[in-house]
Image (cartoon, rainbow, N blue to C red; front, top):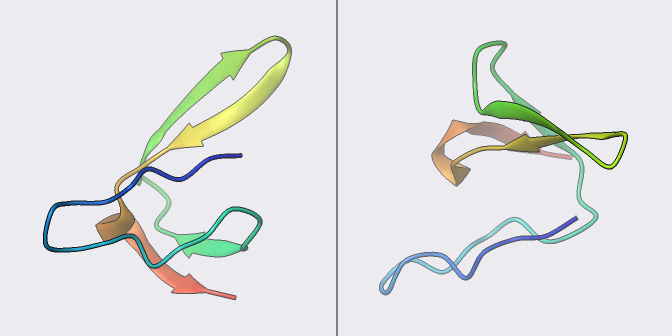
Length: 49
């Protein structure tokens, strides 16, 4: 849905629309307007598929 800009010296490598693998306990799930979203740090992502 969205990707932040990253840190000053570390731009984000993941892009909107990419599928990612992450750990079972990574991130935080939120419900908004009937949709479920996941908020997480890029360092919690294991792989970009």
